Each structure stands twice: as structure tokens, then as C-alpha cells.
Image (cartoon, rainbow, N blue to C red; front, side, top):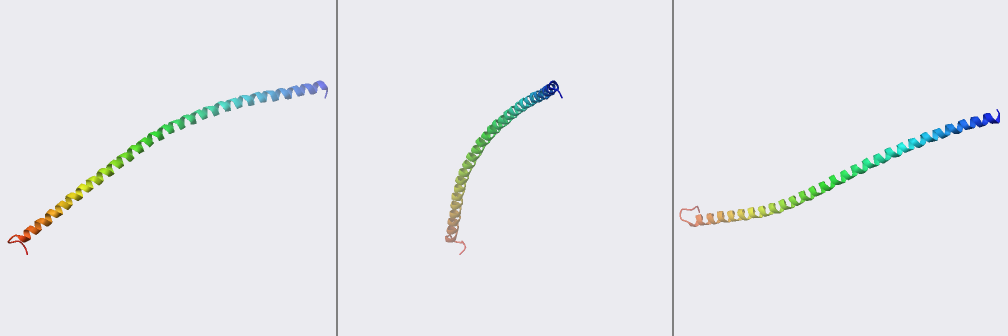
Length: 107
């Protein structure tokens, strides 16, 4: 093989490598664009999720406040009911004592 043939072959190989490198660069650029696009989508989804979680946190806080109010109201209603039952039992006891003292009452 002559020197010229070797140079021609070498130029052919180098040209092939350059073309391959050019294709690789374009593939890398496309991969970079796709990756950036996916990162953007993930970022948007994380932002949406953050907003959703924040909204849920407010709802949970509101629910906890409602439960606390309900518990306080329930305790108050229970206390009032207890007072009414105590008063009723006392009244029934007083009524029984009076009927025992009255003539014709049961001994």
C-alpha cells in the first residue's frame, strides 16, 4: 500500500469518526433537552404536590380545630346532662321522702 493510499484510507477513517462524533453530539444534545424537559416536568409535579400537601395541612388543621371545638361542646353538654340527671334524681328522692311522710303513703 502506498503512502497516498494510506493517507486516503486514514482520511476516510477520520471522516467516519468525525461524522460519528457529530451524530453522538446531536444525540447528547437531544438527550440533554429531553432530560431538561423531564426535570421541568418533575419540578412542576413537585410544586403541584407541595400545593396539594399545603392545602391538606390547612384542612387537617381545620379538622383538628373542629374536633377540639366538638370535644369542648360535648364535655359541656355532658356536664349539663349530668347536672340535670343529678337534679332529677334528687327531685325523685325528695318526692319519695315526701310520699313516705304523708298519710296513706307506703311504709
